[in-house]
Length: 79
Image (tube, rainbow, N blue to C red; front, side):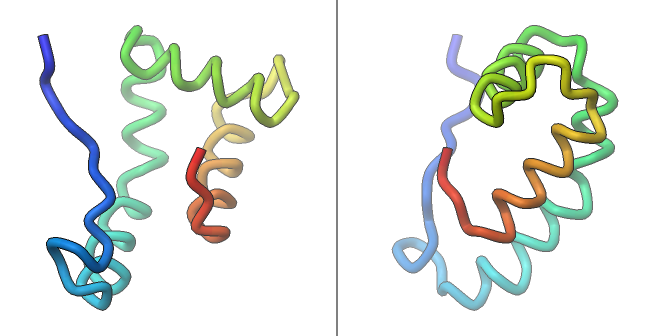
């Protein structure tokens, strides 16, 4: 069952300023708490395992993974 679709709306359906000034800060403020609360759930655990592989740190703890995600956000990296 599809429960969500993630799209890149920056500059297409929404003004780029709204994305940068509202949506990015909203996501950033909630990221760490979300990861910590849901890390054991398969829908989150699988992407976290993929992130460990991507950053070549198979033993990375949640703090390291969250830091990597913040770094990706800062770099505007799409992974």
